Each structure stands twice: as C-alpha cells, then as structure tokens.
Figure 1 (cartoon, rainbow over the protein chains, first blue to last red):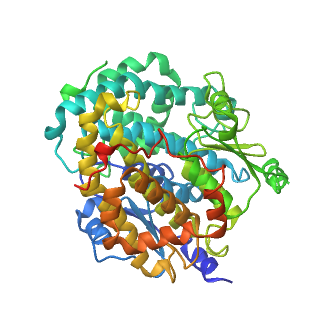
Figure 2 (cartoon, chains in turn blue, purple):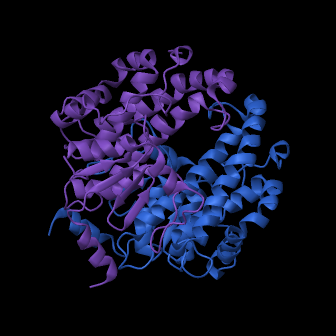
Figure 3 (cartoon, chains in turn cyan, brown):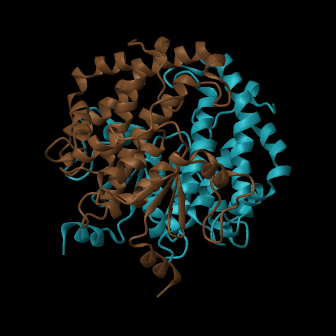
Length: 258
Length: 258
C-alpha cells in the first residue's frame, strides 16, 4: 500500500479543523454550513481569535513536506492534509459528507463545482468589489464614490445576471425535482447559493426584495435550506458568526435598487 | 454497471472539444496549454467564430438531462459531459492528461487546485479589474481614471503579493526538486502560472521586469514551461490566439512600475 493510500485510510474518523478568522461568517461560512448540515465533527478557530490563521499564513510558514504554503484562509486541516481555497475545500469535503450527489455519478462533482465557482464569482467575489472597487488595502471611506458607481452596476446588471442564471439552472432538467440545483437532492451547491443569498439580503435588502418576483426558484431554495433542522439550529447558535466587516457589509448608501 | 460508469468508459479515447471565443487567448488558454503539452486530441471552436459559444450560453439553452446550463465559456465537451469554469475543467482534465502529480497521491489534485485557484484569483481575475474596476459592461475609456488608480494598487501591492506567494511555494519542501510548484514534476499548476506570467508580461512589461530580481523562481518556471518542445511549437503555431481585448490588455498609460 502506498503512502498516499495509507494516509487516506488513516484520515477516516479524523475530525475536521476549520482555520478561519473570527468575527465574520466570511468565506469560511460555506464550509461551516456543509459540516453543520451533515453533523460532522469539526473544530473552528474562529472561536480562538486570529492567531491560528496568522501562524498559518505567516511569512516563515513554508508549508511542510507534502503541503505547499497557504496565502489566505479558509484552510481545512484533515489529518496530514491542509487545504486552502473555499471551493477546493468544499470539493474535498462534499463527497465525504454525502453532499456531492449520488456516489455512482462520478461526474456530478464537476457539475457541482461549476455551479459553486459561478456562485462564488458573481454573488461573493464581485460583491466584495462593491465596497472595495479600487483597492482591498484601502478603507471603504477612501473609495466611496467608486463604490456607489460599482454597486449601481452590480445591482442593475450583475445581480440579475447571476440570480437569473441560477433560476435557469433550476428550470433545467438536470436539476431534477424539488427545490435543488442538481439531481433532485440537496448538495453542497445549494448550501453555497443559500449563503450567497443570505449575505446579499443582509447587504442589499432593497435590491434583493426587488429580485424575488423574477427569481422565485432561487428564493424557494433559500427558504428550503434555511428551514432544514440542522441549519436552523446552527443559525441560532453561537457557532454562527455575525455579519460585520467582511464580504457582505451593509452600508445604507449602497442599499439601492438601481 | 451503473449508467455513470458506462458513460465514463465510453469517454475513453473520445476527443476533447474546447468551446471558447475566437480572437483572444482568454481563460481558454489554460485549457489549451494542458491539451497541447500532452499532445491530446482536441478541437477548439475559437477557429470557428463566436457561434458555438453563443449557442451554448443562449437564453433558450437550459442544458440537458444531466448537464445544467452554462453561464460563460470556456466549456469543455467530452462525450456526454459538458463542463464550464476554467479551474473545474482543468481539474477534470489534469488526471486524464497525467498533469496532476503521481497517480498514487490521491490528495495531490486538491493541493494543485488550491495553487491554481490562487493564481487565477490574483494573477488573472484581479488583472481584469485593472481595466474594468467599475463595470465589465462599460468601455475602458469610461473608467480610465479608476483603472489607473486600481492599477497603481495592483502593481504596488497585489502583484508582489501573489508573485511572492508563488516564490514561497517554490521555496517550500512540497515543491520538490527542479523548477516546478509541486512534487518535483510538471503539473497543470505550472502551466496555469506560466500563462498568468505571460499575460502579465504583455500587459505590464515594466512592472514585470521590475519583479524579476525578487522572484527568480517564478521567472525560471516561466522559462522552463516556455521552452518545452510542445509548448514552443504551439506558441509559434496559428492555434495560438493573439493577445487583444481580453483579460490581459496592453495600455501604455497602465504600464507603470509604481
């Protein structure tokens, strides 16, 4: 048996360790939701302050014999493996948690990953640029005019484009029956879309309200995830971090409908 | 044998079809480089005009029984499977093309995907925002002042951050011997970084020249890929699309060093 196979076997039953900043749901939230929905054993450094993240991404941390160094959280430690990048961590976790569609559908994970990358592109990464269009290293207050200009475009063009895309996915045959994006069952792509919609509702309540009528399927999916027992319990718990100065921020002057 | 397994078997030996816009290397280039380096059989709709892309992303295309609809190219068709999203397509292709590290290292693909997503985030997606910081739907000429401001930040802060990260990856033990990012052998992550550096050298020749001294490993990797026989032959062929109005654009006024 090869070293890699041995390593894989030895990871069965090993709890997951999420390494993420405290104080915001952030990109780590996508990983938490998958772990919470499936009742997986995990720890979360968000409840230990910023030091675990800082030591992982520090200048002197060059990774180890098998793991390259890490640029940014979230990271997931599972046995000897340490992974970064949200969609990558989810792709690793989803089949292990039963969130990647039917086990015999070997290509499902790639179809789900396409949906997840598209949601993160348009409903998460681009959202951050609404309050930081010029430089992530500057304060919002130093780029307020440009933020409003970018947000106007986002709300008028990008938000309907991406929500419209997911509405179309829900209309397509590959989504199957029920409220879900793929194959007629809950997958991690649904959890990702749920959190994007949740963050957008916090950031742009007026624009999101105006989107409901034309995107009924997306909002039904949102409610279907939100009312799942384990998700409901999690959202009410202190394991859930509040929205703050992360990707999804609420500024009254950016809460516009056009 | 399940339907999924049968489908997988029936794809062996089926050529790949890249569906991408004509006239730019674009995001499709990452896929071309993997196919070209390994001498894979493929077709490329870039040589057939925009119609194949337009019919895939058109409003009435809802995908099919197994594939959700598509928002944007590149797409890869392989038998019954149609995939979108660059890093996703690469993750599907790389193990099939022998570009995902040793076959017995089952976690390698996730480590490589993290490197690829990081390269695409910082050295491709953010680069597009240097000439479109306010709205992708507006002309560059309508956001020139903001573009210069964003580019100043990119060249001063983001470019060194991401090139510095890959320099660090090359210094880490997991990169192994030789010029490569992971495991001492060429993988698709090296091809992705190569194209990012190539595009950046076209867009920001002055800033990239200034980066060489502090990022020797990254530029050595670039040269090591560029001089591989199949890559060299490809780059000189008419299968290679020229840089134009894509992600990597050259504007004299944005060719700055600080």
